[in-house]
Length: 293
Image 1: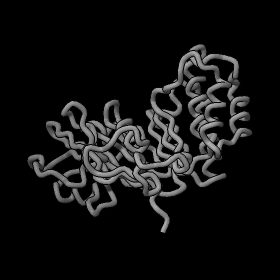
Image 2: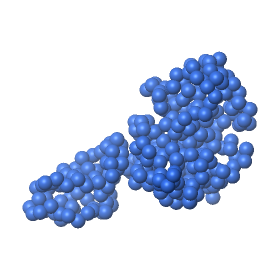
Image 3: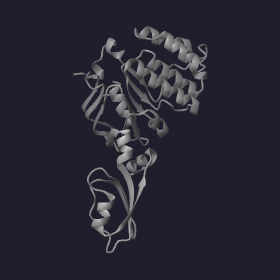
Image 4: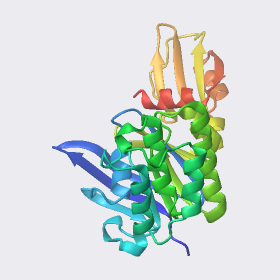
């Protein structure tokens, strides 16, 4: 049986006594793109750094292709591509020197792919890293991550500082990499439109824990916002386990809940002797609702 390419099992991590990741379990299936969403400081970067082997979990485990990333040898490191939130490239290094370093470090380095991407994105190989625009710096980091043709790709805000055309081209290159070599991608981003365009699965991280982790289509089909109103008596006080968020007004209840869990808006309205209105939510609305608590 093939191992799960990207896995966190009951992983926790604190900094200076403050919990950032709390018993996080995450499984990304082979050949998929997983959109990893969360507000600032939700713990996304910490989770990616654990998977990249840069920090250890305080408890639990991190695995890349069933290997502890801290135990990876040089050959196994070739399987893992990582684009961090902040690039650790010496500012006076020329683009050509950075690419040559990647070629020397990775026997699997695809020089033709790197050269084609340099041309595609208009990078000048004679420029120093510090003189590149923020978007071009991001592109260089992206090239360094995918040119070795890794089996697993960890991307922390890959489209940061890119214009809409460059963002789409980066997403197309990710899809091409998956098609060509079956790469598995974990992508953290604030750009929800990018997730909707390419992701197979989505996880929403809030306060260091996953609120949901499932196929994108299932998530969008099963979560609704429902307004209950016109109660014949007092508003009910009992909570609904299937509800992610409940806001109680003077004479109405607005609830974000799953509608494929056996509890439907219609059944709740009948139970509470009231009327209901159901609103379909897009990914951005779902993200806001599930990240608000």
